[in-house]
Amino acid sequence: MSGETVVYKNDMNLVPLRKFNNTEVNLFFTLCNKLKDKG
Image 1: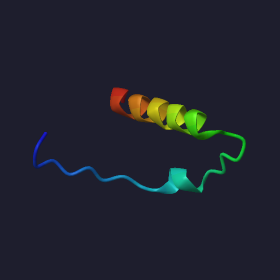
Image 2: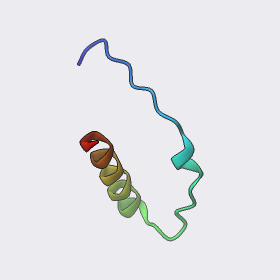
Image 3: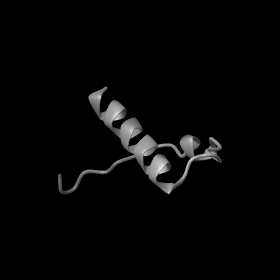
Image 4: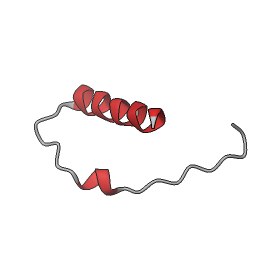
């Protein structure tokens, strides 16, 4: 994995997650990342 560059867009940061607490936000982004990796 050394030497690899990851490029992503920050569009997801524009989505308001006002009612999510810290744990829920972490879980949400973990699920998004796993779905992205699954492809």
